[in-house]
Image 1 (cartoon, helix red, strand yellow):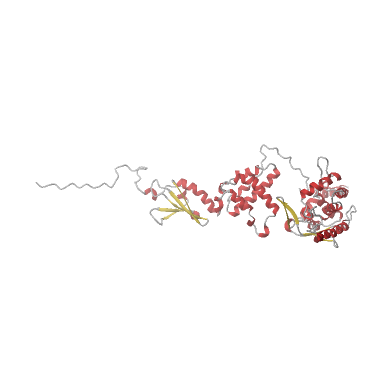
Image 2 (cartoon, helix red, strand yellow):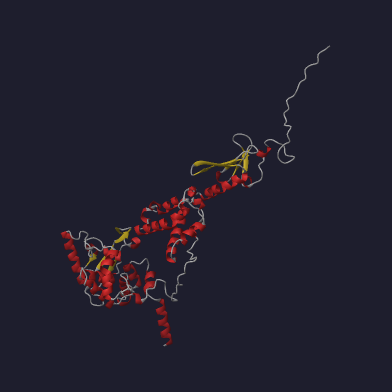
Length: 450
């Protein structure tokens, strides 16, 4: 009997289990080859992969997306930012698209620093090397901006990633100011900070600067009321002391510790137009007694408790004059020449090494706070410039207004000449401050009706 040949069994190559997914779609890697329509696919173009199978998706700004190669695989994106290769991945196309939104924002704005914290943005804003050497902030302005950033900006955005800074953050910074005036200063700082962030690649949204101080539950200040036809810079004549009032202050100063030297200081300020910082650093080499010309080439400023001597305001030297005698008859030129000779003698003896015409008791620059406390307050009371509560219309800066009004209306100088001697940025400031447009209107109307 012939033996039957052994049975041959074929190993099955198909799974007996039904295919997963929607009915009618073959199982396998077909899903990876045809990714579902989504944000990544819609915004990109496909090309053959450099390695492996399937397609890759190329987006704008050099972003390359590698779809998942299997059903539960991960989506991956690769790009170059700030010269370095970066990548991220997600479990689905939609999650990867959400992550790429911030990447696209940074690459579109060419702002690689948006991943850094807000503290880095503040440091960039305060960095003096951000400006050319001849356009840097003054010491006083730099100190003011530093204090505003430390007090208001750093607590809000210091730990926030720059890309996550929103308008609500900048609004919170401005609202932290206690008063509307301080709020205006903080808003100016925010505007400059946002501009620096846009230029430095830390920010991409200019609307961050579109904020203003909001009172909330705080009392609103009284509305500002101005006279039609007059500038906001207009200095009312009541804010300018008359010659007799200056004389009273001078006599009160002369009765103090330094006698006639303090009286001469007040008269020089009133009839030369020097600001406090320029007067405090006035040296013997700056005054030409023959032509009665003062060269204003420096000033002293106090920043964080330290005194610095630097170029005058707006970094522009100027020259001004002083009269032989003041309208009240004070011999200003004669007294100033005598004081200059005395200052030269003090410099030679070592008591006044800087050659200052109006030095402090130690032979150095006066601090405005010390001069106000130890000299001016007593003189203000004696001259009637202050009442018992310390209230009064005039301050030391009122003496500068005296020079401008005297030059305009007593000496009959042209406003452009007064502007140059006073050190105003332009002659329009001189006109807005001292030449009242309303007065001219009323005079013309009066003449017409007469």
